[in-house]
Length: 114
Length: 109
Image 1: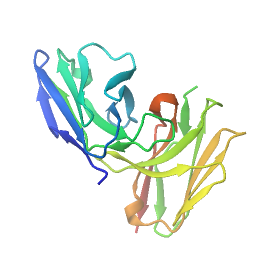
Image 2: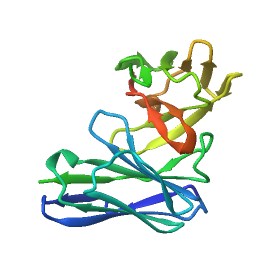
Image 3: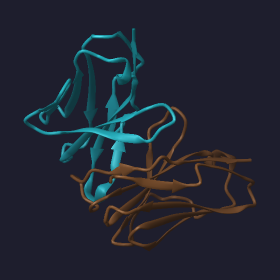
Image 4: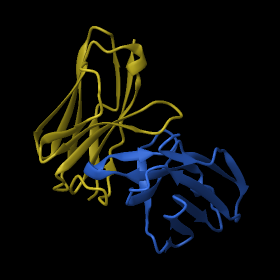
């Protein structure tokens, strides 16, 4: 089973709201990732977790706060977002955080910030 | 210069055609390369890894030229179901994937 699940599928939030995106995998993978994808653009890496520790933060604004409570779960907490943060947020996982590892993507959460 | 550059699309081809996508990368130290496929409003999915010796998977052939820092994907006998955006991807240490802009393929009956 190479499935990564994400909830919710769609999210609409105001600029003063606090919400969370959730990602789960049961493949025993020890690396998990958050990507952001704007329309007609490729995905851009936001964060990498390796063995539940944050290993890469691509200078993401602090209004995005990742959390990895255990090896199967990855959250992205959202607070005080801007309309330009509207995008598809993709979670991915891989066996390890290495160059040659295949990353499996979840279906994404479509976020609209009003 | 972008780290990964791809042919601009879209490519509109008839069923049965052979189509080639090209990609160049800027970091000569890069070691791992992939082609991902992304259908409209879906997540990217790994199509194939790219090895120095070249590799083939059915109708798909990927080639890597390290000297020219060039990657290619050849699709033979195109099917309607091949219509998608094809993303050239370079992996870096720590698992960071750098995506090209993507090339849109539309296969017509």
